[in-house]
Length: 117
Image (cartoon, rainbow, N blue to C red):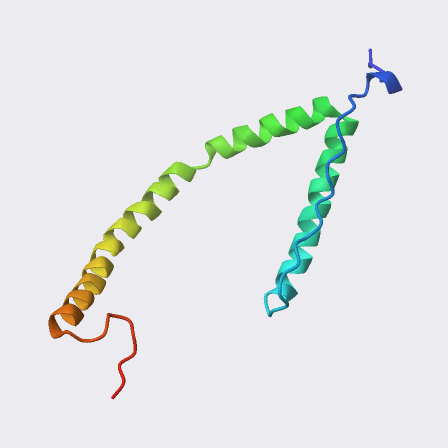
């Protein structure tokens, strides 16, 4: 037996505030950012409309997506990335620390600044 929804049974949620995009300086990345921002806004609007039309189905989709994401080895991947960054950080810190120490010993300009000859 299928359950028919009456107009009174639909949950009324407050309307999402239409956030106007912030004014950014025009630059070369705007060519890529503006279409991506428009797509993201459209997908968000569609998702909110779907959740308002059929909240039970939206909840089931959210649970299914969470289950699939749980199966992905995200923690292992993040752990690997962090361990590689930790190993790479030591030589980088040693290099910049040595450079600053050498500049201080020589009494020259601070490390990273340009020297005038």
